[in-house]
Length: 191
Figure (cartoon, rainbow, N blue to C red):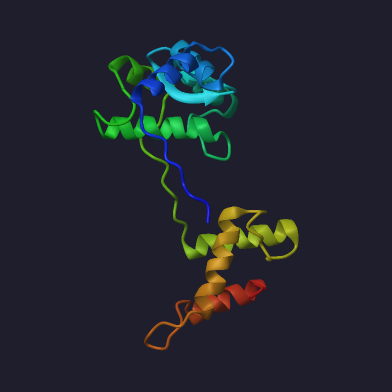
């Protein structure tokens, strides 16, 4: 079995190593430090292609998004980084002193583009509305075998309905009523 050799701790040797690293332009850590210094004190901390984006850069991204889409409610599939920036802004507004710094000027910049300060909330649709959605889907596609990758919301509804029909509650009844099963059967729902 090989013996382990321990090197005694010498803080002076670490200081010399740090000095050598910070003075070298060939070492990635030194370049990283330089990039973060170049980003400025009001950086949002988000990196884009090797550089940190400032708050003003992120606001410009948000303005472009709004010009393209007609709203400033950025979703994660559209732009994950920008959606996170918006979520951080909402959090900071609801929790002053936590998260990013939101000065009056920054809040005014968000308000100027009609930013929605309320988080995106899921819209719950009734069962009857979902039946209508399935009817429309059937007219368009010729079937009701909705896949999640085709229509995420409606596909998830179908998966939940299939699960609810199989699931038996403690008192012996199903979670999905016979009336609802009949409505789905009338459409030709594929169980």
